[in-house]
Length: 225
Image 1 (cartoon, rainbow, N blue to C red):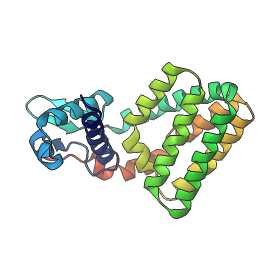
Image 2: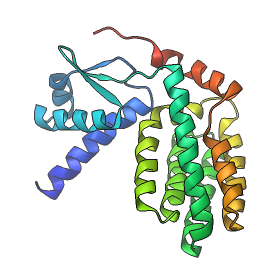
Image 3: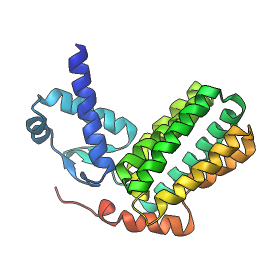
Image 4: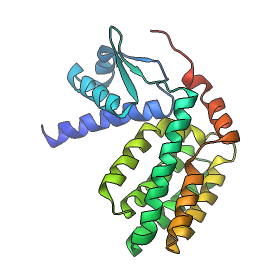
């Protein structure tokens, strides 16, 4: 496979992933291979490969006699996933606080400034991308490759819901303040504090969970064939 072909297939998968994450493709919506192939100007083979890759991350379900559909997650399952994500990120933070390099800290501070600029402009999309860089920098700083892989995989699985959280009023500014507390703990080398701040930043409980469910009303609604 040529580099150009590989990039095209990667971009195709990224486009579908982003459309699921932003709600352009909604839970339960059928992903017809023929229609998608026509839309992207490709054969059905790269479409099928992209859908299988998205199915492996849980964003798409392959159903008998219906084909691929955007996966839907119920409230209980969603809360369970955020609980696990919170513990994984807490572990990354605990290790990163001990193993952080000056370069890691500089990367985190740059990502935080990008988050600050996006929040100031009210740009949810830019904030999400900068926020993603912030968290992935923590995963890498843990210096535990397996843990970083697991964190990144679950991060991808929760992408649609993490993005939707940013639509809740004042969430971007609250997230920014939580990042500051995380950064301070990491810079101080305080693993337990970093773990606690990350856990609180990620876990979705009480009013935050109710707000997320309200934002998910359309996404969780069933769709026809």
